[in-house]
Image (tube, rainbow over all chains, first blue to last red; front, side):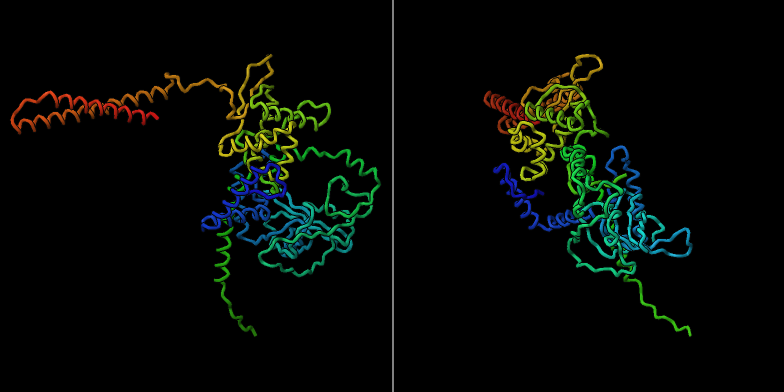
Length: 289
Length: 223
């Protein structure tokens, strides 16, 4: 409800707020319904990060509630067909997809997710790996019917929201074994953040990384003039633009409405999956010879 | 098509949000746009009612709403909210007003915190507007239609009141009649004496008291 940054600026109000929070906590702890609501809230916070593609595009011109609802239904329907796991930028995935150029076969690609973009049925992600000394990137649509299986080999986050700088990094930072085994994480814990700092190749680069304020990069070793220019073109006032911030996000009330609906549907899906698993009986293989 | 950012949560604004932001005329660059709006937002928080050009008022209104909604949502212990307040309010004493006066004032509001009304134009084509915080101490800008008896809802309310009154009077009259009849019957049964003056006065008293009750009831209903 209220974060408690230890910097009380106006003491009386902050004390009142603290009292209110403790009261709220106490009440929610005592009652069972309150507990459930709390749980729901916690779930919602997780869902925001696990399923970002369920939230609509924040640009007002693109909003269309009916289309968004239909797309969400289609996404849930696709999730009935294949299991789309939780993953983040920086996670290592293996994707099995059929390819029009090799009919009847399945292509498996292992790589690190360097970007997640778009929302609704257009949601996509880019996997990157280095194969035979050649950088390979494949952009997959998350709800593409060609995709047959998505497997998370290592679930982790990185320091940045996009890892496009791996294109200019030394090859060891994005080389992954295609035969990698999936790593198992403890069941109920936060997703670990990999604090690795990537070393880039010397210039020229695809983008001016020194201007992007990236946390996951080692010292770039550039001439001072590059940093000066970066400082000159920086727009430090943009973080104070409250309306731009508002237009980049979806208000919480709306998020809760959408995610609540998605949550109930996904829970139903979970239940049906479990039931199917139970139904599947072991069939003794028959002797053929 | 982009994904919505979810790291910072915001409350929904209760006003219509334009699909794009106005740029204004800024010879000094995009930073100046925010500086302009900053002055307006500060003035709005300070004076609670200002008159200005329409585009600036429309733009500043969104920023003021965002600032107040954040102040209500996160309180004064939230570092980023405090930084925002520090940036947007040029006069620093207003930060206290935002968190101590405005946030409690608007805590339970379900509507917008500001009101924007069209103002008379100074020159054709140049729109003006009045921007004000709701719950300000000034007299209202809108005409008071509450007391206009000719408005349809007031007319209907008056008629309803009249009908209610008439119904109540009838009930009381019936009651009094019943009582008189009953007393007359009792007297006839006792000794066929004529009804004395005293009982008549009593009856009058009773009717007076019932009248008072009725008035009270009507008042309560009015409230």
